[in-house]
Image (cartoon, rainbow, N blue to C red; front, side):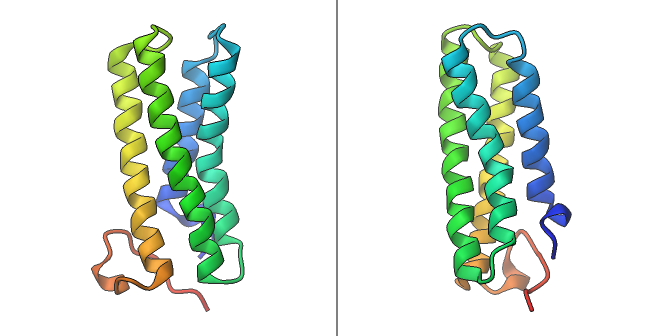
Length: 128
């Protein structure tokens, strides 16, 4: 399956765009840079992992994407606390990021073979 077909990749791309839009007028360039890098890293690592030759390599990049999700969640909390992001919208971004992280975790389990695909919450076609 191509990465463009994965719902998790599509949602991660949308999240990245939402973060960019939210921070469009942010003058805290350090935080803005960190947050946009983390947000872009999520779909980018999903895509890179899916383009790799083995499930083990794919899982490795999915772990990077999941790590970037945690990084982004932390940065959103900080941005809310210092007034860069409105609390209500920030909490919506956090909820979406957590849901994407859970989808990535399910995909990692599939790639690592620790669950059978028919039991996974997130189903994809097996690699050939």
